[in-house]
Amino acid sequence: PPDVETLGRSTWTLLHSIAASYPESPSRTQQSDLLSFVGLFSKLYPCWVCAEDFQGYMARQKPEVSSRDEFSQWLCRAHNDVNRKLGKPEFDCSRWDERWRTGWKD
Ligand code: FAD
Image: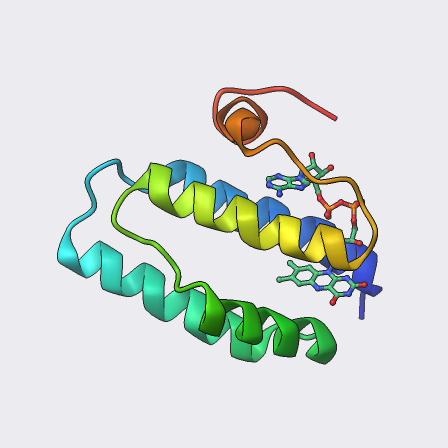
């Protein structure tokens, strides 16, 4: 299995990409699908310590799925929570669109 860092980098790419393609005005079904997805994701993520902490975060900060903007900002804060825990720099969430939707490479 990939190491925790490689898995993490790939997974954040997937999660932020899902946020980038999420509708600005999602239907009820799209909202409940996204809620189910993040809930199941947090149970199945194959780094158990990570998964446990992420479930704890979700219990304190409920996932916001009412629009692309709400979800992307929620996800950005969730990712920053992990960044803080790992001693990594916090990401400026006002630049989320530029990083994940309209482009820039790192
Ligand atoms: P990553 O954190 O993987 O970020 C990738 C890219 O995303 C960055 O280069 C940057 O451009 C962008 N980015 C950074 N912050 C944000 C943000 N807030 N919003 C939007 N974009 C951003 N690792 C552990 O060791 N312990 C854990 O408990 C742990 N929990 C995790 C929980 C989850 C749900 C996930 C998906 C990963 C977790 N990881 C954990 C892995 C960890 O978060 C990193 O992915 C890994 O350490 C590699 O870090 P990185 O420096 O390559 O950048």
